[in-house]
Image 1 (cartoon, rainbow, N blue to C red):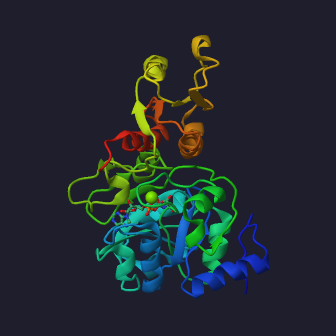
Image 2: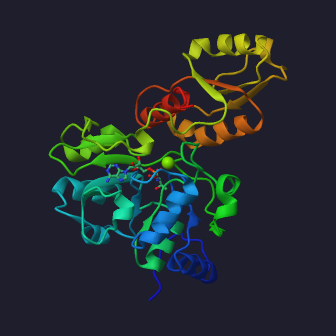
Length: 333
Ligand code: TXA
Ligand code: MG
């Protein structure tokens, strides 16, 4: 029987093509509600190895296994604590990844040899349609080159990886626009490994206990490296009051400057050809939705410096601030 997913948009022929690619061990661009993923059959080690090669990601950095349904959880994880079931029940399908003890069905290629696995059920109908069509989970990192800004449209994936990927499905702009929240439930205390689409408050409201920050026992992972999610341009994070001073100073020095802000441009800078402004709608949800697109557009318009400020540290604002700090961190040579 064909799996039915409400709101799915692939025709039978498109679905068949995507599933065939995955069955052949190929890698496809797959929209999710967070960012676009670079997806391979998560039970095929060679296909998973191909993901690492295309992305240029060092091996040993584990991937997220995307499940078709919450009922698949016990096939890929063992010793699943009650807390994980409650979070899955509340937030799946959706932007939450759980780190749990892995089952023997998960290949080493996915987990980088760890005894834990990261799993989530994506909230995008099209992603679930493909995973249910395959009948097995897909392993998928964000569909960008290692260290670069994650893609939130099909065109972003084509720009980054188009030559190396036979098929990139069109799922529209990603609803959330930032990666999933990752919570480690494999040890005694729940720990937040990466802030994302589900906020710490939302997690704690369901768990009824505090979620601790990551500790040194958490695996060193790409999304947790200091410099990550970085555009080509340098990123400078300043206070809201300082944005236009910093911009004026850099223009004075002869730089081409991009700004990401919800503030109006002061008249004195209005018609400056060295300035590109990406105006955000108010609120953290809009900032999350637009951030990666803004970084890409400003990069493409040749800005050498991108100036922005952090949203208040509430809800999705925590994840936006996390990504901006990493984009602004000193880059490796
Ligand atoms: O929203 C998302 O999570 C997107 C979409 C495509 O689902 N995926 C994504 O994947 O952001 P990626 O590979 O860019 O980030 C996955 C993160 C990495 O930081 C990785 O180290 C961590 O998940 N991770 C995977 N398995 C883990 C494990 N067993 N323990 C701890 N962290 C793990
Ligand atoms: Mg990534």
